[in-house]
Image (tube, rainbow, N blue to C red; front, side, top):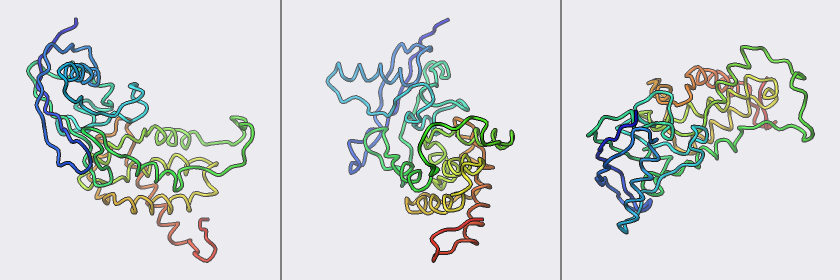
Length: 260
């Protein structure tokens, strides 16, 4: 049965990247427990607009747990209290009546705040552009069974490809490391035959771009895996590290390539 609750919101408000920003408190009365978290913020914003105040800026797109744009830190945890759940799929029934909820943007040097809860995740795009693709001739799609793939490899590749690039791993990591994201994008190709020709140049180029973006280093806290809404596993980081070491050993600068 639908219930209604009253909650207090402490929301990070920041006009732009140069503004210091700070928390502002709002009271949300009669919130339906059937609402998603973003729907609740929509209602709060409608009230702010009616009063002539600036609405809370937030990122969102699909609202189906696919695009990864909705990520915010809720009570100190990226995407909120429920495991394997994006912010847009989090419902207000996860909170008690009278609860105080603190909402803030992802905190990382490589994710500068644009406004309020919106951060610039362009660093992820640049990492993908550095090598997160395969170079193949264009034309019609090949037959699905043309390239045999071991079942275990296919399943692991699909698990890695589930990463939606939301950045929760970076926000959860004490070092603001992007290793889980980068390793997922590397593994999804490294585990498949189509990704083999550029396997070692790919890992070298993507890791180099990750370092250029000034993400932190991985010290095996495991917070990234715990915060990931798609259950991307730490094993991907191990695979990336192995490939990176092999790439470093076989790289020939004069030839511009590497690998085995």
